[in-house]
Length: 316
Image (cartoon, one colour):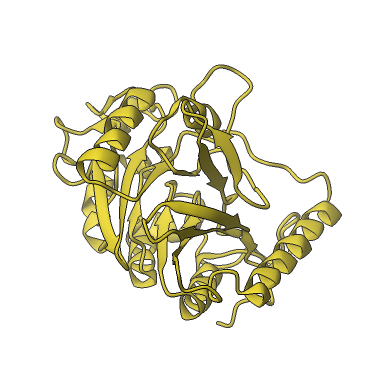
């Protein structure tokens, strides 16, 4: 797994200041509130939180006193109080990384996420760390679905426990979601994923995005991905998937722990923009994408900034 590394603490703090300033600009500009002739949607997203419920220790060498799901929860509450239409999603690797996971086996993380109002998540490789049985044992703590479109769980305890896709109606907008997981072979112990079959993510994307766009008539199709942002080799990534896609509007990713100041735009097979974003790891950053739609419910424009969960921002 590739981790984004800042060249120095100064570089990291510079990114914090930039993100915070950009966030304040969006609030003061009130881009989506001054014109009521269109609908707006705010997508908030996390990934690779790795059981970081609390902030990093104050003596941590890179992120002292930063991050934590509790601070993300505070940011989410603040944004929901400011914006009308907000959805919150996660791109996997919820588990593993702190003693909370060792003690509660993932149940605490899922309870917190349920209270925060997550709409959906996908499974990351570390969500298999207690095996399929272990994941199934705590799954009832989540009041949101796990979307695993390219995992076939037919011969496991997770049969019929996850979903291939989800459709949500929000303020007259029809939003479709599907989820992609990384190839488990060589990354996760065989005993932990058992008879799970890995399906080609590109073919899966073509199938479900077309279904959501044309059969379900969704105005927006979101892929929740744990494939990884980009690689040096020919392995499939979010950036490559965006280029190969036709009916995907947004890819919210995880796995590579990539910190982005804001989402990037990638041209797909039909020369249309696909919004691709990722929000680091350890609940250090909350991804945010703001969209506006025309009266015909077509995407008109987008703004994006990833808010850093810095020490003195959240009110806990």
